[in-house]
Image (cartoon, rainbow, N blue to C red; front, top):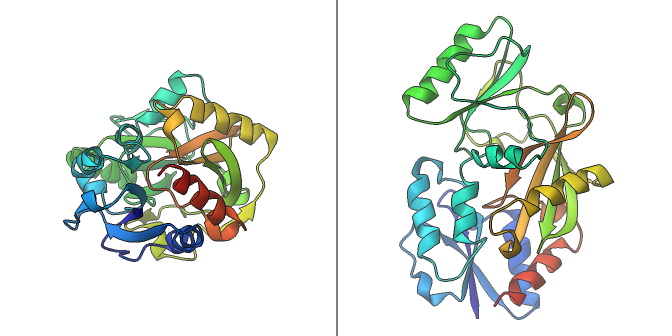
Length: 281
């Protein structure tokens, strides 16, 4: 049995998560190796493909989804990949009554009711093409909004929540639908500063530390996963939450395609995921 851990040409050997998984799978007698998703690999030689660090697909989302749909055995399932690689899935979650960060979709102008806000495309990874704007920066913000719209991209505008600067984001990681561990992500965006490349290129931003989820955060995360089309088929999931103005956890992202699972921040987590993967063979 051989497993492919799909990655991208920027990280042909994968990231820290992948190296931890390969070692844990090897200890179970399961061979696993990194494989670049768009490198003309013979995928038929693998018994299972697990999508991991495929972090370059945003400009070719249709090709990426078609690749996932062409695989006979892929995790997470291709249907979930199609749904989750466009952040318009947040509209589905909000429609299901879940607490989601308020979002304006393709607005004609920048908002006047929020002192600070974030503009970003609906298809993106690592805060690429994302920027935080505020009072006195309307012209720059409008230019950012216009550039995304002119490129034919769906635009999202969300209020910048001040708790991000203090509490950060809490990422709840799930394995086979069960809570595994949590991590805290520090502030990523500074005022008036857009992100042109993936956040991982700048270690000073988005620093990650181990954390513990609260009961309220767990309740929101479980509800979010229950609302996912094809939820029973999820091998892994990451629910990113940030405190709202009243402290209520709000969903900022639901990562089901290629999330960093922060395995090095949680002892034994690589073994847990390796066991889950081997159980799918």
